[in-house]
Amino acid sequence: MTKRALITGITGQDGSYLAELLLEKGYEVHGIVRRSSTFGTERIDHLYKDPHNIDARLFLHYGDLTDGQSMTNLVLDIEPDEIYNLGAQSHVRVSFDQPAYTFQSTGGGALNVLEAARQLNKHKPTKVYQASSSEMFGEVLETPQTERTPFQPQSPYACAKVYAFHQTVNYRKSYDMFAVNGILFNHESPRR
Image 1 (cartoon, rainbow, N blue to C red):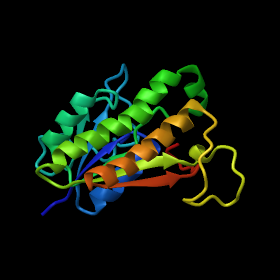
Image 2: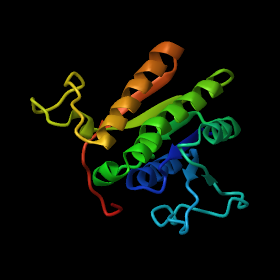
Image 3: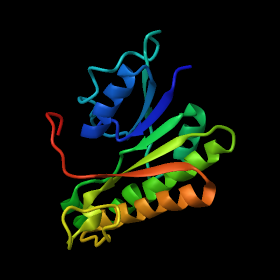
């Protein structure tokens, strides 16, 4: 049976590479894109086929992490086996200019994904991966950092990521869900 994955942030650097990897592994991949004045899919254009094509395995859906009900509706419609939450307002400098939006999309968005997965888990188990950030460590007192290094966030973005991290742990423990955090450090690629 073909596995089905849902990727938020599919048009970003990491989301596009993840979509490529999952398609190579035979997955059906669904991605959430925000409606904007430009389509912004250049990182995944080489993967995309018309959804009416019988060979299509990549499907894009309009949605927004800040809209909990639309996230739940999408997750219940798609019924993914795995959800990768890579979407966020991820520019640290912008987070100082737009702290509320940063929290809503990054922290609240993670909560909306987790709650949507919890609703789906009532009739079909799904796994959730939350992309966390080394920004959560902030001004660190030890190098290298480990999973036991205390968080000392220094920006609205980092604070939102700490919230998302703890909600992921909370949902795993409180609702017996498969929900994990991956702490990503700065990384570059030709798609950045």
